[in-house]
Amino acid sequence: MSLVNALIRATLPLAPRPVIRFFARRYVAGTTLDQAVATVRRLAGQGCCATIDVLGESVTQRAQAGAARDEYLRVLDVLPSERLEANVSLKPTQLGLAIDEGFCRDNIAAIIEKAASLGGFVRIDMEDSPTTDATLRVFRSLAARFPGRTGLVLQARLRRTLADAAALGAERANIRLCKGIYLEPRPIAYEERDIIRNAFVSALRVLLRAGSYVGIATHDEWLVEQALAIIADLGLRPDQYEFQMLLGVDPQLRRIIVDGGHTLRVYVPFGTHWYPYSVRRLRENPTIVRAGLEGFLRGRLDR
Image (cartoon, rainbow, N blue to C red):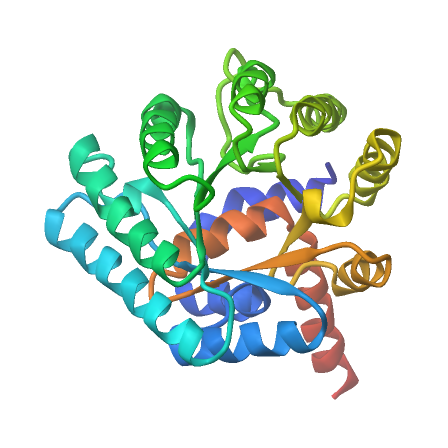
C-alpha cells in the first residue's frame, strides 16, 4: 500500500460529508427510489442484472427497522411495475438484528414473502464478525421457509469461511462470495491480499463443486480468471453461477464479462444513509480519491 493511499484511508472518516459525497457519487445510485430504478433500467440496457440495496445499517430502534422493512416492500412494489427484476439485498442490522434476532427474522421474512410472490429474490448480506452466527441462523430459518428465494453472503477474508462454505454448499445454499470489506482482528480474519485471494478461490471451488449457485462478487481480474478456470474445469452452464460487481467499479471489466456470455449482476445502493457505505467503499479503493484530487488540482493549475 502506498503512503498516499494509507493517508487517504486514515483521514477519510474525518473528511466533511460534502467531500465524501463528491468522491462517492459513482458508488451510489442516488437518494431516491426513482434514481435507483433509472440506474437499474440503464444497466439492463447494457445487458446487466441488478440488485437494489436500501442503504442503512446498525439500527437501534424498532421503528427504524420497521421503516427499513417498509421501504423494501415499496421497492418490491415498484420494480415489477417498471418491468424490472424484483431482486434486493439487505443488511440484518438494518432490519433489527442488534435489537432482537426474532424481530429481525420476522422483518426479513416479510420482505422475502413479498419478493417470492413476485418471483423475486432477497440476498441477506453478511456484516462484521460479531453478527455472523446470528445471520447464519436467520438465513437458514428463512431458506427453509422460502426455498430458492433467499441467499447469503460469505466473506473470503474470514478464517471460518472455508468451513462455512463446506456446510452451506452441502445445503445447496445460494451464496454471494466476496473478499469482505470489514476490518477484523487477525485471529478472525486474514490480512494479506494474496492470502485473501487464495481463500476466495478455495471457497469458490468448494461451493461450485457442491452445486451451490454462486454470485462471484469481485472486481479483481485475477479472481475473475481463476473463477472462469474453475467454471470450465467443472463444466458449468451459465445458469449455474453469475458474476457480481458494485455500481461504479470497473465498467470495462463488467463489459468484458457480459460480452463473454456470463450473467453479471450490479449492486445498486440508494438512500439517504449513503455516508457509512461511501466511506467504506472509498477506504477500500482510495485510488478514486487520488484520481479525483489529481483531476481537481490539474484543473486549478490549468486556469
